[in-house]
Length: 242
Image (cartoon, rainbow, N blue to C red; front, side, top):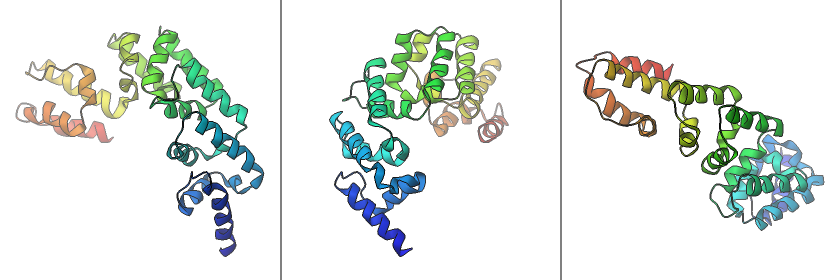
């Protein structure tokens, strides 16, 4: 055990000059996820990648987030890093000084190129243009990291059932990030019940309804109708927690 912490201290002393990690605990977190960070053969690669990120304007805090969330990325060849940084800036038009550049880099770096192409292909199969996909990415990069099933389920509901246009969704990608099972469907069901019973309710479009916190949604669309529909709250609660 003493030898282990001695090793950690040595690793930390190497990394400390980059000021990426603030404590031994953070070093341990990274090592637990990618044990070969202990290999000093990767030291120069890591140092080159850190310098590359700094040249792109990444702060030490931002670099720390990248390393802690995806330690494997910092050990990749610098050419790999450059490729993804180039894609974020050139292909998706996110400038390095943008608040979403870090998230864009992380979104691309966390998945295989083949997976990214398949996901983008799904959007295109629903009629999305390159510009609309770029707009979505610039607002919420991790939308391209969802599973194929999740993307198709969301687009089928929003576009085929609700007739939302690609431009509308691209400008409001938070809709795509909402859980179909735990938020979108349960809330739509509540609204449908109220409308079927011709009860007066707040006339909000689906987007602002989905952006409400759960407590606000309950206050606006469930509790006011507890007398007319006694089981509405309980049935909605079961759907959300199932």
